[in-house]
Image (cartoon, rainbow, N blue to C red; front, side, top):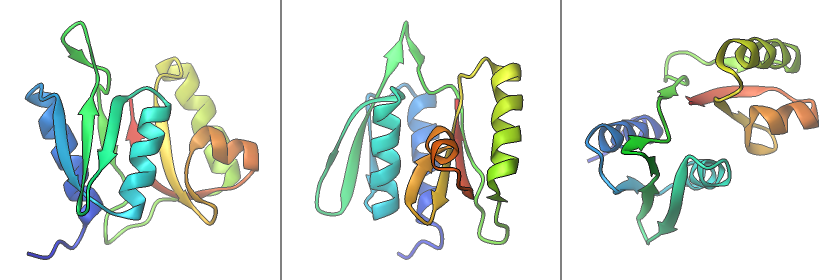
Length: 134
């Protein structure tokens, strides 16, 4: 079976696992997914992850029987690209901070790799919006 969009499939697996209160979820392994798992762990959205030969097992994090990851949205569809410049990212982050209390994270694909909105702002670069995690 070939997947046209492996990242979208992995995000759907995470969403389904959190809705069903699973402790772990297996994802298809790719460089992009390994980078995203590392960022999610670094920012406290998952407990841990481990890599096998063809999969990544993510241990989901819960607090008081509620998932720490309230919502995860996939923004980079095959037919559209959500490319954000540094200026657009600055404005979006300011609006997001005031409306959501700064509790969400944007994950972007940049020339420097997979980075969060905060890292992009520090390096003064933009990129292709992949995910929004809150």
